[in-house]
Length: 497
Image (cartoon, rainbow, N blue to C red; front, side, top):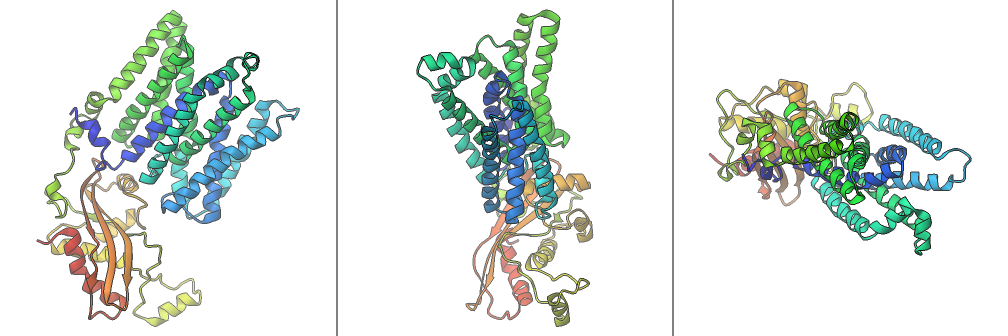
């Protein structure tokens, strides 16, 4: 069981990005949050994440992207998040001479950003579901590229923060003394706000505003209440963030709950314990309680704690046998595969001509009652189920799958969550069509990826892929291409028997 944590950090674990992204967001926000709480900027910590969320919603509304569709959409999300956060800071700088108190200005911006976020989400049907999940803090939308961006920029934020930590400290604690030393507190403030803007933008794009605001405030509130020095406050806040991120994630994973809110509740527990201890027995007891809670959180989120939390389930979630990759694995007795709709990532509609030309004509003239056109992914879904059955693999009834999955899932983790909500147990087959082109050379250029997922344990059981060109000399129509390509395509992807 001591090897549980390395497996959850491996590429075989479907929720690895959610785990790593939540951990990075938690630690960076907790460290910067010490200054947010120390300088009484908590309201700014609410407004900036919401402004970033509004920027993401605006960028997707303007571009037509949704959060879980393409990597380009994720780049748009980052630009929108940065624009929202720094736009909010710029507006606050422009109205700093307003007679209104600073808290009132920040509150007004928060109200406007919240309203704008809701309106942009409501106006964007393509990204409604994904954006709602993002802002709720599900953490499932973090892609490999998002995680790489987060690691790179979080490292940059950490390096800059460490290099200028003394200037930021002087500007925060005693600006007049900083001036006597020849330091400009305005520059240090601008640097701190810039670091907050970058960290919050990345956090909101990957984890949502709720998670960002929680980690900006709760670990810092606990740390500053008991830490004798600022350096120790940073250490305690980071330790609480690590424990809350890892422990909260595994708890949410076991209980099938959104990871973000559970992590925030976990980060609030040390603060609640510290407040209770300081109220009853004074400051020394609170310090001891803080160290005990932080140590327990780290141990509880470590390999032994994870294995203990997951119980027998951790033993089952070992990496799949490499011998199973490339050949479809045997299923448990009574199990059947739910073949999900094939996800189209080719960037083309891939429509199939209807057997009756009048149906295509009705759609062309805009007849609202015309039947929807069939597509290559639709046909591949049916072909996949047939090929599995031909190999003796039990397949779940297509109508049962369609009720839970009327369209292709955005990603493998989202498919697992949807299946659990719909009460579907057993293995899921998630397919992604990344390339499909049949030209005059009579070669089908295709790239189809298959993943077999375990709904109950949330792990990858098997994966296969078909990438080699397929010669189809006799095929004339798109339907004939699919029929003729079925056997060689799935012989390569599933493995011959």
